Length: 408
Image (cartoon, rainbow, N blue to C red; front, side, top):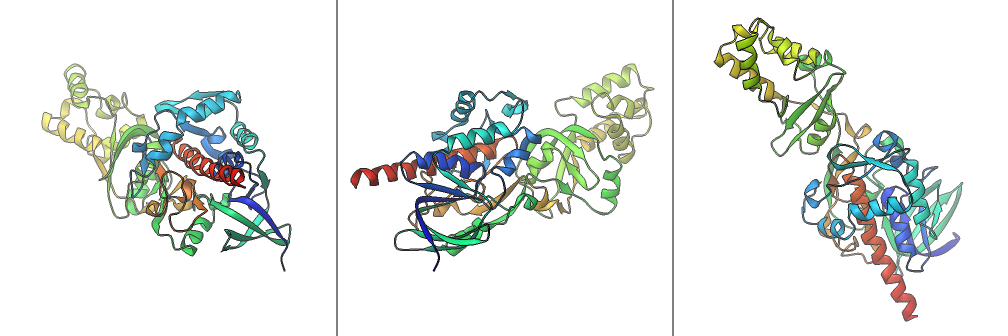
């Protein structure tokens, strides 16, 4: 018979959501145990943002998230906001700076955020190198069989919080365990797929794009569902960069996207002025004022504008501008979970309380963070969802624990 220890709350997963939830849950006075199979906590935090962790976004709002139920995230996001987390960062004297579009990054290292979370989670206990063998429902709550350093034992808990993340970046330990647990407890799942991921191409188009590998340019990238204006990067497999990662969350297999270069520039007026004053200049040379030279040359070759500006009629100039601003391409796929920053889809929010993240059919069972069908845009939004959903579950558990202790 296995040795059994008892805790009030067991949290599965020591990523951003699990670490943050532990501290709030422990404030109710109950014993909180946080476990993870990794050797160190917060592995994905450590590599995020190029090692500097884009920990939130000043512009975060429910409109920056994708879900089958677009209203679900509102409660948590409005009750624990980006400003709350910024205040916490300031209290720990973590130096940070704002990049473009409201993105906040650590000045030094993502380790600052991990250290903050570890300090905040006290007095909860963190146990690493621990495998989850089995999860079962009991009359009093849950029994979870764990294995640490080859020894198996059981943990009995009144509350079980699933913060195991999604399928993205399996080399960091992603397993999809949270989805299997949801199915075990008869919760519905929204189909999952890689999101915030580079798009790939094939055939002649890929050969063409390979010649531009390493070139980045400002662009407007559109699908049938959304549009983003940021940088696009040509790679040996297709397209990447912020604009492409953003649109990948909305793109569906078989659909085309359009890429438009030199956003914010009135190309028609600019090229007509140049044609009138410097008509002998090559079209590609003039366009190189608004985009990288290699790209302007490639696009002029592709769209048959190899001569001088003076050679282009108003009609031909208009057609060229349309081609430059609405270049249609059809990806063959994406780079998959290997490089995806997050997983789209997950535990159906219809089965969860938007206020507490507790399941509606299994008392004491909570799902938070990436495992839930709430996916943010690129730029710190997914971290904010981790903080907000963790806060919602943690404070609910703490309140419940405190009430129980007062009653007893």
